[in-house]
Amino acid sequence: MNKFKALMLTTAVVISITSCDNNENPEISNNQNAQLSLGGHISHKDCGYIDNNWPSNAELSTTRIINASETNFLVGQNANIASLFNINTVPLGFAIGNGTLNAISYGAGYIIFGESLYNYALDNGGRISVAMVQAHEVAHQLQFRNNIPSRNESTARASELEADAFAGFYIGHADGYNADWTTAAPAYTFSASLGDNNVNSPGHHGTAAQRRSAFRLGWLLRDNAYPGARSFDSSFFRYYDQYVLAGALRGETEFTRPEGISEDVHEYIMSKMDELHKISTGEISEEEFLNL
Ligand SMILES: [Zn+2]
Image 1 (cartoon, rainbow, N blue to C red):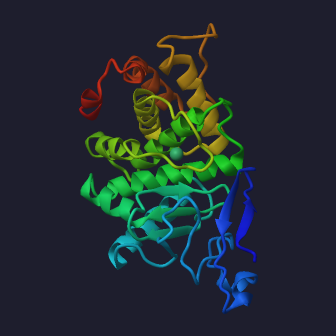
Image 2 (image 1 turned 120 degrees about the vertical axis):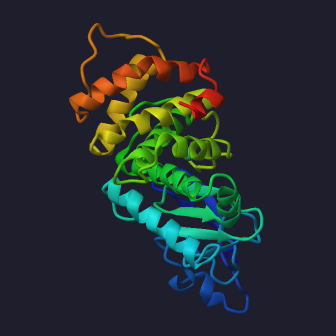
Image 3 (image 1 turned 90 degrees about the vertical axis):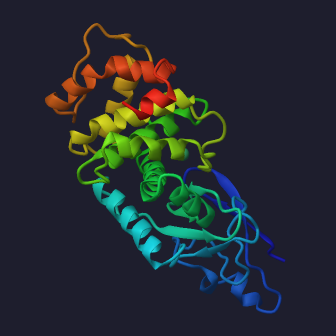
């Protein structure tokens, strides 16, 4: 019986997915009819099983999470995030059922957002917390599609820090969520408190303090027009490597403005470098971070 299917994701990560094998309807498991619209990657309609990242009793919906109002909110945010980042809207599914405290960005090109996580976000910061999580997950799609982060580390740290920065940019940008810091920081804190289950990211995700500084840097870049994923990537790591982590110019005698960043925004970022460094070391505490 064709009980397990191996699915090769575009990013060379292999996960196994249990098919909806059904002895009474054997044709269902090996044709396209059982597949919903997440790019045809998941076959589950009859047994409800999603994949081994979700509880076995969770069911996939492509139409509804919580209620019509919340579904519209998340679908709208997903479209708005894609619009700001200049990509087609990322296919989005919903994992429904107990224990779905998760949101996962798949290398195959779609995102699944869990119902339990949605409810938890509403109870901890409200809808902006939902938007924050979704922006972070869409950022992973930008990485998959653009072969970024350009920085290669043996762990997931670089991609997680960069996803936090993309999310910060979205949350602060006028064409994004347009949130001031008082609103933005608690949503970030909520998101970062979750276990991150991006399938491409085993291991270390950066310290909490480093992740806060990456999000803050993305948020501070909010007045800059979106420069494109690769340009955002190179700007982010220039600032982050040269100043944020080091606390001073490192490896270069002169720091030139990254391409794609306006002079005004560059000056503004440079005026915040001491603060960003102190966030990254923890010298500015989590509580102080919330009140910046
Ligand atoms: Zn992540």
